[in-house]
Structures are given as structure tokens and as C-alpha cells.
Image 1 (cartoon, rainbow, N blue to C red):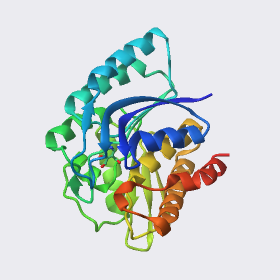
Image 2: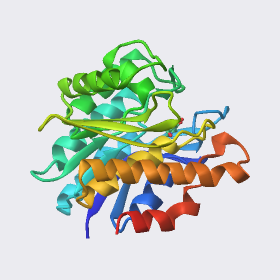
Image 3: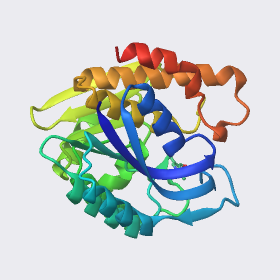
Image 4: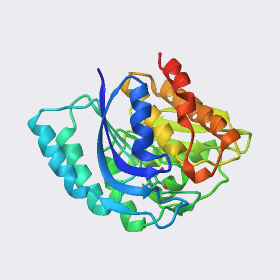
Length: 277
Ligand code: PXL
């Protein structure tokens, strides 16, 4: 059985990070080991007054134990990380658990809609860039692209702009950058990727839904990681992740309580199982 380890926080309420990655990757028929980096009462987007228990000191102890057990993983997938020190500890985890044939997927969670999430700043971006350099795949949204490349955030761009951004992301060291939330104002939204090994660009689009729900980036990244681990091509992995993310948004809208509560990915798990058959 394929094995992924995903390293990100547990937000106890507000579906995102581990509460999304664990059920989704498991549903794809992949064993999903976890390293919780922090426990928060809620995620930080849209809620105030949340608790935050930092678990950075546990990460290297878990890694040490796993080394003794000689564990290995087909993929290491990181999401939201809470501090610069935590990012440094995880870069050591990458060095310890990288093998000749596994993949490292970094979702450089930094912000959305042109703004940082609470607690992040330029210094954190510098640290996150170093983690991205070690990755086979990175999965930023357009806001995170602007932070990683130090370019202004814009919502008006074309295909040439996205291709240029992908090439520049690859030049910073990551083999295959994937950009999410790509839209050209033509009623579609999707993702774009660049395989720097062969110079191939891939795009995948579905219908653009104007309404925003929280946690879709984590759904996309989890499905994309699972699909790559299952041996799908870059284009097929993008198609599956775009389709499932869209399915989840459409399923959420009719009964949405509050956008910060997250996306109802549970209602579409059956479709995901079909997509990866
Ligand atoms: O969905 C990304 C995410 C993960 N974890 C925490 C967050 C966010 C985004 O707001 O706050 C704690």
C-alpha cells in the first residue's frame, strides 16, 4: 500500500489542513500518516480568539522514532506551518526522509486574496522559499505566488503571465510548480502546472464559482498529492484535483452556514473514489 506522511496543523473546528488531508488521502486508498504541527481551536482565517498549541518540539522526536523503525513514505506533503523555526525543523525532516523515489509536496500556505494569513510576514516567506526549493511539487495560489516571487498581487492576468510565473517558480528550485485558483475572467477557474524536466505546461479548468468557501486549497493539494502518489500523470492529477474541488464547492453552497466553517468535501468522497479508479 502506498504511504503518505502529511505534516500540518489540526484546526479543531473549521475544516482545513489535517482534518481535510487525512480523510481525503485515505479515501484514495493511500495510508496517511500524520505529524500535527500545532493544535488550534479553529483555523486563523475568519475566526478570532483561537487557541494555538505549538508542537514544533515533537516533530524531531517523532522523526527520530520513525528513523529507528526504518519507516519510509511515497510522499511527504506539508501544509500550514506555524513558525520559521517549524519550517526549519521540517527541512531537516525532508533531508532525513527523502529517498531516491519519493516525492516532496509543499503547499506554501501564506495567504489568500492578496493578503497574509494572521501571523505571517516577509521573513516567514523567506523561510518558506527554502522549503519550496527542496520540493518536487509546490502548490501556491496566486497570492502565495506574489509573495514567493516578490511581485505585486493582481487579479488581472493572462496565460502568458501564469506561464512566466511558473517558470520563475521553477527557477527558484522546485521541479514542478502548480498554481491554483487560476482564472482568466472567462467563466472558468482551475490550475496550471509546469514540469521543468521536460518544459511541459498543463492547464485544467472547471466552471468558475463566484462564491468563496474556506479550505479549498487544502482539498486541492491533498487530492493532487494522492493522485501523483497513485501514479497519475501531471495532467490527470490536475484534472482530478480541479474536478473534485469544484464538486465540493458546488455541494457546499446549498447548505452553507458560514464560509469559514469549510467546504463539505465529505459529500463528494464517492466521486473522488471513482476519479482515481
Ligand atoms: O487552509 C489553510 C489553513 C490551514 N491551517 C490554518 C489556517 C489556514 C488558513 O487560514 O489558518 C491554521
